[in-house]
Amino acid sequence: MIKNKVAFKITIIYFVIGFIWILSTDHILNYMGASDGMYHAIQAFKGWFFVAATSVFLYFLVRNEMQLKNQIEADLIKAKLKAEESDHLKSAFLANMSHEIRTPLNGILGFCELLQDDSFKEDDKQIFAKHLMKNGHELVKLISDIMDISKIQENQYEISKKRFNLNSLLYVIFLEYKQSEIQANRKNVDFKLIRGNDDSEIEIYSDSVRLTQIFQNFLENAFFHTMEGFVHFGYQKKADGIEFFVEDSGIGIDESNAERIFKPFFKGNKQLVGNRGIGLGLAINKGLVNLLGGDLKFTSTPNVGTRFYFSLDNSNVLLNRSITATQNKKVVKMKPVNFDPFENKVSQN
Image 1 (spheres, helix red, strand yellow):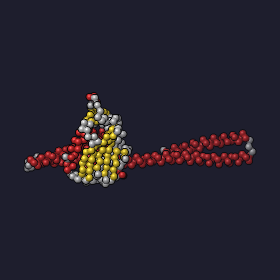
Image 2 (cartoon, helix red, strand yellow):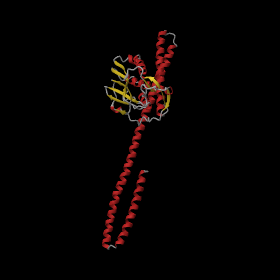
Image 3 (cartoon, rainbow, N blue to C red):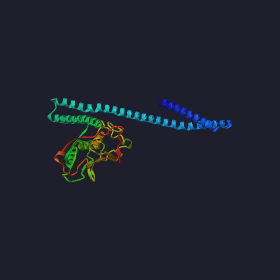
Image 4 (cartoon, rainbow, N blue to C red):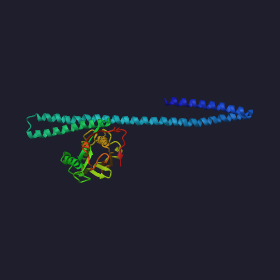
C-alpha cells in the first residue's frame, strides 16, 4: 500500500512539474525571439536543470516516505514485542494460577479429611484447623488480588474515604506482622514502625482499608526478600502533606527490572524458592496509590535494599483538621486511572 502511494505521488509530481516547465519555458523563448543556436542551447540547459531540480525534489520526497515507512515498521516491531511480552506474562499467569490455586485447595481438602479421621487426637485436630484456616486465607487473598487488579485496569475501583487515627492504624499493622509467622521466621530482621508524629490523636481523611492493603503488600514483599537486616515502615510529615514509606535491607531490585516490577504477573527473572503469589501485589499498589492521589516511587540497590515511598498532599489527606459530620465518611468514584501495564513508566529517584 505504501509503495503504491509513493509511485503514484512520484508519477503525478514528475508529470505536473515537467508539463509546467516545458510549456512555460517554450513560451518564454518564443516571446524572447531567440536565434536557433541560442534556442537549442537554452533547451539543453533547461533539460539538465529540470533533471537536477526534479532529482533533488524526488530525493526529499522518497526520503520522507522511507522515514515514514521505517517509523511504521518500528511501531509494528514495538507492538509485536509488547504482544509477545503480554503473551509471556499471561502464560506465566496461567501457569502460576494453576499452581497457586491448587496449592491452598489441596491443603484445605487434605486437612478436611484429616479432621474427619477419629484416630487423631483433639490437639492434632486443632493444628489441622489452624492450617486449614491459613490455606483458606491464602486462597481468599489470591482471589481478592485478581478482582482488585481487574477493577483497577477497568477503572471500576471505588475509594471510600473517612476520618481515622493514622498512628493507631499503623500500630495495628505493626502488631499484626510482629506477631505473625513470617516475623517469627525472620528473627535476624529488625522490624520497626517509624512515626513522623508522636501525637496519638493525629487524624487524616483517606481510605484506611486501601492504605492498609498497600502497606501489607509492601511488607510481605519486604519480609520475603529480607533474610537479615531490617524492615522499616511508617511516614514522615512534609510541608504539603505526608510521605509514606516501606524500606528493607533485602536483595534489592536489578536496574533491568526497574520498569517491569509494577506490571501485573511479573515476579522477577529468577524464580526464588518459596516465592508464592502470582505477581500482583506491586501492580495493585501502583493503582491504589494513584487512586489515593499519590505517585509511587522507589529507590533500590541490589544486595543493599529497597525503599518504596509515595506522598499524599493536603488536597488528598487532611492533617489535624476539623472535619464536618457530612465529610466523616464519603465514597468517591475516582476518575479513570491510566493503568496500562505495558505503557506505565515507573517513577524512580
